[in-house]
Length: 581
Image 1: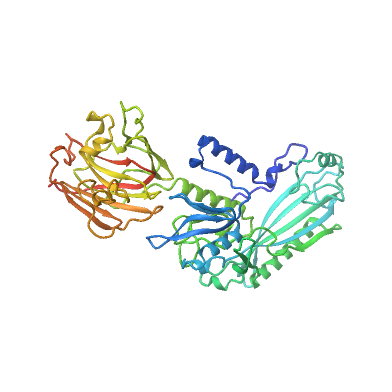
Image 2: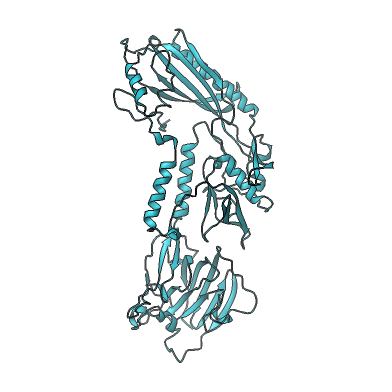
């Protein structure tokens, strides 16, 4: 009862009604503004540009690859102008409209075994729409002045619901009512929906005489959605056609058929429109200018083919618009609707798109595992700080880390760098984190057990981690000699991972480390597999290496910048109880 309805009006200056701007009908100005902003923010560097427009390009399919977790990931986009590789850690948002979104999803996952493939396209819904335009004498509307001058435009939004004789609900509809003056030639919608800046039209309005009121009544009703328990029985759907387009990709085959409930609602809505028209005529002569039902699919309000839900067995996408059983594929727009209601779906579709965009660009706060403490919140560097370099001309850049989309992203400099946490570690602890390679030759590492880098007198303070702590390696090329002691999972230069194959996820997929530091013992678990159990027996060349963290000699952890671009997230630790062995 207290909800505010969206206004059906445009800004006005008395004494005349307002005009729609020309760009109301085009998204081009918005795209141009976004592209210019991205170009300015990136300083001309396309590799870091946040937004680009690729003109004259048709998307054919998405490149899908299975992941180690049993899900699917999008690694690129196939287009009419060639393939586009997706950046590791990137996401794809399908925003091509309800029909094309469904076709693209069906074509991309055809024969992949995606569990939700049989559901895609099965819940096609749209709006039932009717139009009734009448003209009545000015005198039929009580309270209007009899003076012959220009009338203003009026608009009204009326909710409706249709029920059966036994009270069962058939469905909802609403009426959009627009009225204006303008003599015997202007219709009710001319002054509301078709107003664009036009000097000749403006002069015509100034000289018009309003002897009649033109009233347009448009009814919009909701189509019946699919039964979640049996979506295949829904008569309206999008499938892949046997016919192919000019690029050899299968076209969409569309069935849009009203159910009996749809027909009953449509009839009830039309009857309500006739009653409203008779009320406006108020017993005076009423001229009917238009009375018709629009064909299904002519409203551009299609929805539902990728409907969202919490149950992966009964919906295509989740509450954030991400496809179930995928890592990085999202949909935007009314294709996500489980049901359509009667209002224009655009505002709801935009709201869902904004929420999905916010989630991708700024994921929700990190929630630590039970008993663990979060060390990186996904939004700021917080207590993390970068190592420094002095007295090294030409090699004075340690690189950097930036926070982007909830992760820490490395940028390589001209010499080794270390992002370290200025909070001392517990004496005994478990450290958990996730990392992702963005190229096969990426090289980084997790450093543990080193003293405050600022206090050792090094020109490059990152080497305090190298000479006083331990590095849990991240390097699938095991440089410089491909020895196990230099490969992912190794305690670098001390002990390689255990014999046997390592489960290292490929470029673009997240890996997990669990590193347990228990006195002189270090255990490394990679993706749930224990790959290294190392006992430190001392280092004569560096007697302070591997000492436990104490109040007098606190120890720290850090992340390395070395080669390429490595991503980190979900960094957390938990103290172990008991004394140091």
